[in-house]
Each structure stands twice: as C-alpha cells, then as structure tokens.
Length: 111
Length: 114
Image 1 (cartoon, chains in turn red, yellow):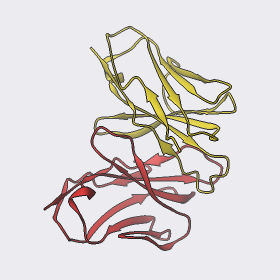
Image 2 (cartoon, chains in turn yellow, blue):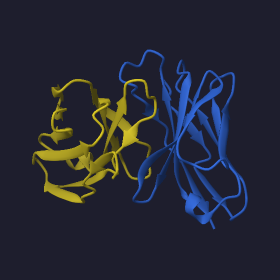
Image 3 (tube, helix red, strand yellow):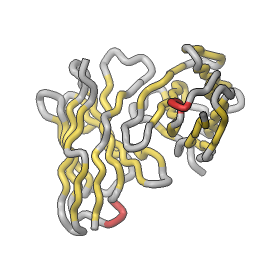
Image 4 (tube, chains in turn orange, yellow):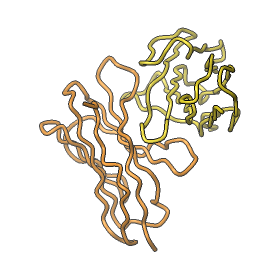
C-alpha cells in the first residue's frame, strides 16, 4: 500500500465551479502537508502548506487537513482556465526531510 | 529572487551510457533534493544533500549518485542507464529557516533513454 493515495482523475469542470481535490495517507507520523501545482512540462510550484488539522485559506484556495481521518483536501473556488494543471499533495514527518507525494490529479477547467 | 535552475532541459542517451544533471538552488538555500517523476508514478525521492554531504537516499540503486558543491549547487549522475530511467528529474531546494520542510522545485531535466 502506498503511503499517500491520490485519485489521478482526470477531472474536468466548467469555469467558475468549486473544485475539490483529495488525498489520503496511511502513516499517522505525517505532520506537515503541502499542495503543489504542476503545469505541463514544468516543475511543481508550491501552492499551500499547513501543519495542523483545520482549514487554511489563501485567496481562492483552501487547504483542509483532518488528521483523525488521515485525509487532506484542496478546494479551489471560482475555478479559472488558468487553474488547469496537475495538483500534487505532499507530506512529511517530523525528523524526516524528503517529501512523500501523491501521484497527482489532473484538472481541466473548461471556459 | 531567482528560482531553482536545472540543466540541461532535455537529455537523450542510449542504454548503458551515463547521464549528468545539474541543479542550482535558490540563493541562501543549503539543502538540495533530487526526485524522479516517471509517468504514472508520481515523484519519488532520490537523494538529499545538505552542506556538501549526502544525508539520505531513497529506494534507488547505487548507480544513482551525486554530489553537492561548496556553492550548494548539485549534480546527479546516473550510470549504466536503463530504459526505465526515462523520466523527468526534478531538483528542489530548501532553506534552513523552512518550518514545514517546504521545498521549491526547478523546471526539471527530461531524460530519455533509447
């Protein structure tokens, strides 16, 4: 079993929709959680990072962590065609330094 | 502030050859990470360098190696290339001040092994 699971999609939504992207994990030692956005043929770009359970908001993006369920989400409000990309969740443990990634969800926002 | 840079952008090699990939971290970042992103597999951790030393490596054979130079730039070497080494190789850097171990990625080097 992979330590981090992420639905690969693809996911297609109309412009303006609310998008929900999710990851589950199996290791309760994971403490730090991140979301990256990767455009085609580019490197991943850090979108958001969080530590505790709860919500963190940044503009149209909200990251949610539920440690009791080992479940994290990224919500995108008022989605735009420019949001079309692959979204990767990543996490790490206290004392570890490498990140553990999900396989990514490919999102297309249709104008 | 300049981001992480990698060279070359593309690299084409034949099976059995050696490949050398290069990375320059963000100014002030001392840690460099290498990841492999193969189709359908997501990012897999390869190597971590900090202050010139290899600190950790992922589940990859010894023919994947590298080093970090005094200016914190890094090199990844892949010996005896195999077809399955074809992938996007990503370098990331991290600041000592990072609280969440947040890492910043370069654009990657796409390695094709024929």
